[in-house]
Length: 270
Ligand code: KIV
Ligand code: NA
Image 1: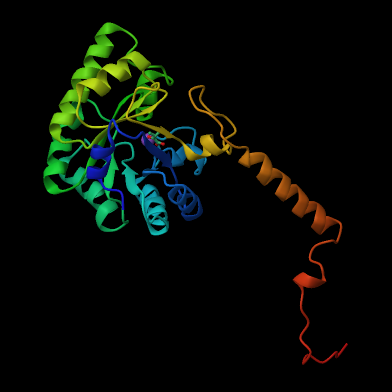
Image 2: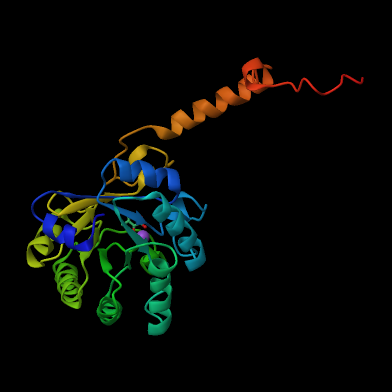
């Protein structure tokens, strides 16, 4: 089993690999490939639940996917993403929501979209035994604040703020930090400045690890961000299988004799 300590030891030695997964079969594939961390992202809202953004995802929805992934994962560290407003509003509620992912669903850590408002809650959760992965840069739960998904840390003031927040979350005890859609030179600066592993998405090659959304990486998503890469073409594979099935049923080719059986004891009464 990969632990948060293993990731710390891997930092600067071997690149850390992380992928999202939302269900048992994809978790099995990711785990068997030797991926270090499987993230049950709130991107489940976009990839799987049919929402435009991650904003509507609930704790109950996320928890159900965390359970499925945790049951199918033997080796990787399972990290549960905290949905919009499930953290940071009320301390007790935050801890209850995060604790549920560990106590009931089988995750070993949580991730939350970080900001000035998450330093204290990160420290509190770590004290209680809930490992926290921080997340800076583009935080998609702020889509209504941003009015889109802009790159972050593109000017000196923004870069300085992000560096300070990265240090604050590392000091608060976060075991790792996701950097999303930030300039690679800023990601490099942050990676050098803190002693916990950085995991980048759209953050260049200098992070201690990389993460992608599973559906984007395998080519299942209809649209992928420019910083992502499709390593496969799963969507067209699925499309052609479904087309073949429909055609085979319509043409009477499926089911064939080998897919059918007769019961010898039933009388032919008609
Ligand atoms: O929800 C998600 O998939 C994420 C990753 C992109 C880091 O937060
Ligand atoms: Na997320």
